[in-house]
Length: 462
Image (cartoon, rainbow, N blue to C red; front, side, top):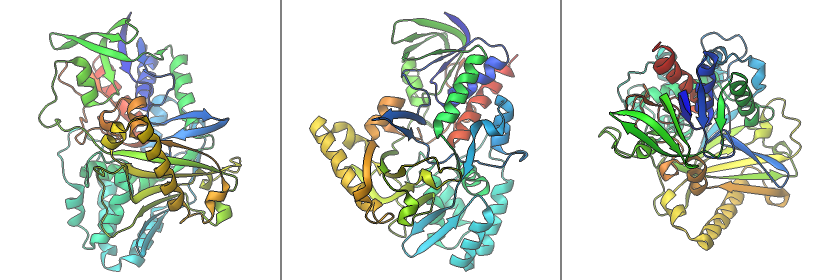
């Protein structure tokens, strides 16, 4: 079957790229290896209850009518209305270190005030940092790598403040151990602190279903349970892709959301460049609890807590250990506006995990590791919801093994390779990347990634 464009993966970026191209009359086919859409951000039903995967918060939230914001650009490019995503703002979140807390909401003034109170010697410097980030053009595709940690050190004198700022931003987007690119730091700072957190009332399914409906309405073809077995190349260009079903598809352009290393492995004879040689290794375990009481009934009204148990934030693979509980993310979907319809309490806790440990367990050891993590998650959760264990009515857990199965990401790396390919180019002339390894971050960033690559390498080429 011949198409104008084949897209590998029906995650946020692939669906957005497909919609954008189909709007302009392109014959587009999305090939998805699983039965579910969404990739890292999906949903499922277990024992009659619906669970979100990945979505703690949709970052980049801005109110309707805000000019120039990523969310506004996305809605315009895909021709959605703001109300189509039914977004509800957070109640308020915090960064929690020993003896220090920084609260923040979708109003940057709250964080500015918190820094002034907790770190008065760095208050003016932090204001300069915020102003410079606000003015920084992080959308340019040509960017030179700069260490975020080193860059922050040119503004701020308090090491603890630097660690506290890095904690949420790295947890929500860094593929690099203990650091990240300053451009990506600026992108995430804007999305978390200058814009903010929101959640659809029905979770991530609201966004995914809207994208799928629109793609199909535009005439796009969506093949589910259709993993790509091989990308055939001839003369430095894609000649066809072969699905695991044996079907062969051809197209003028192929856009892959599978990741840089994962895509090149499908090509077979195109090794990664020296700059991109390192694969990602940042993976997570997340435990989701369903409770017969709401978090607010325990006195917990915070939407998300990013915690760290020491003054230094360690963001790396915990080699040889299943998880690192010394830092993590605690999320309460109930604590968003207009979420009164959630009659069950939902509590999620996320930790850094060691992919190799989880993959090397046999089935008995895997079950035991999950059982141990569950006990650890209950103990840690009770620091936020005292007595919570008596009110657990259901739970589920995903591990690096789950992530690898559903995304195909090497090492279960949630954020892909440490170095990104912002223009989406690969060594193969008509094969481009969108999504994780293109480098735009978060749910909004993923969709903008798909749109950007579609615009740059297909629509602007006419």
